[in-house]
Length: 544
Image (tube, rainbow, N blue to C red; front, side, top):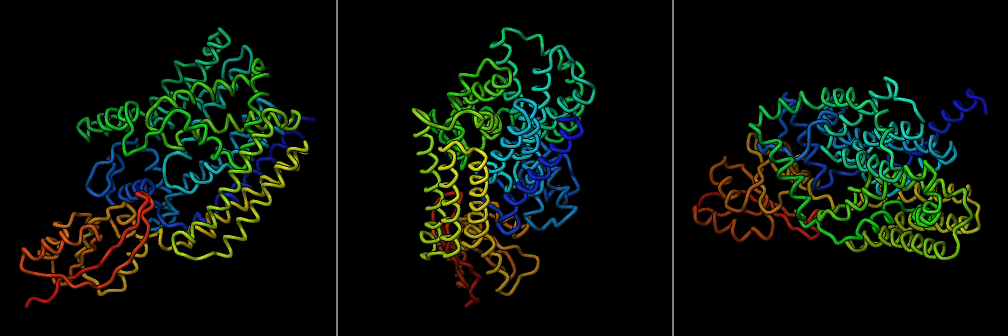
């Protein structure tokens, strides 16, 4: 193929991947309310940058938020300022853009490692993965971080595969600029991924000479130019609290323990990979023996060096969450796409791989149908139809995969991912009001006579989605605080109290010689805590 024809083919691939990504990621993007807990924390802190005009200090209400660096807040605040600062989707735009960029970069890396068809297939697999589908819709750091890490990995691959050629000027800027951006997004995670890849290759090859082609002296300067200015400013503003909390409090706590009950035994990420790469899980599992046999090929070795040592580190760290291994998913997808050229899955690996894929597909379909029934006691016909169609497409893909018709299998599994995305993120989740307590509470408050200048006090339910939806002035208090807000505020003041805090709230009012009238109530399911919640809206009863 001539260079011009090859460039045209790559442009066509990128356009197809872009359309595929939008079809996958846009269902639910605008209709899903803020998802507790991390998303509204990020979005609210970003909105407060706009409200305060302070683009250095990070705050959630009055509390400093120093667990993560500033870049994601800058990106979210910028997209919200350009669109709609009151809508959660405006703060999700950096994640959407990051997810699309990650898919395109994966295809580019795959094209360099294994050829254009494998790159395209790898991009499709990453885009279709359940793990990226979730992160593309969340206003958090991980999708944007993935794009920055992949930019670094792309330049590492270029340097590793290109013998005796130092990175050019623009390649150096991309490598070290991507590293600086990743550091400003989520701290040292990128050093683990890129450093682990480079170290594993140097050990496996017994040759670290190619690392000099990365131009580290100039590169460190580029990274420092990106990171240092804000880091100096925030350390001065916070009195040294940022590094103490982000490195000492957040990072170190996760390395030695499992804060917020996020612990799990080793092997957890094998399950995360299997579910996260659905519906292409069988392809990835069947690729394992092929990748090991081909480990001496430089392209395969690069992906294994990217995947294996970093996976082992994540397994050893006590704190475990599924999205932590998102930066490793492209390496697994590329190995799977390269293995598609091998014989169909069979023998010792093929049967179990397909069985695992079928089990995951059945589980996802069952969950889409069971969730409305479990939470609201109803059978949703749209959910049933969508889940059935997604399951049928996945089963058809696995059947053709077994028969060795890989191109047909790829198309069928991509269709299954599209149907699954539409079903879960548009037909099921946004239409479950019991999950979305904060928007319903906002409607309940709007239906009652307002109280200008007195934000409601909320006791016993302190999820950050309330602050994002009701506003920065929202008061998250305990039962005594809710009673004090009514006693000290104007007669129109209102308090929202969870069932567990109601008795203490009423007792505090009684000590002040008053009682409260119940105005309205609602019940729902708290996603972040996995339990039901019942809230009641109160106003002070007239004085005797």
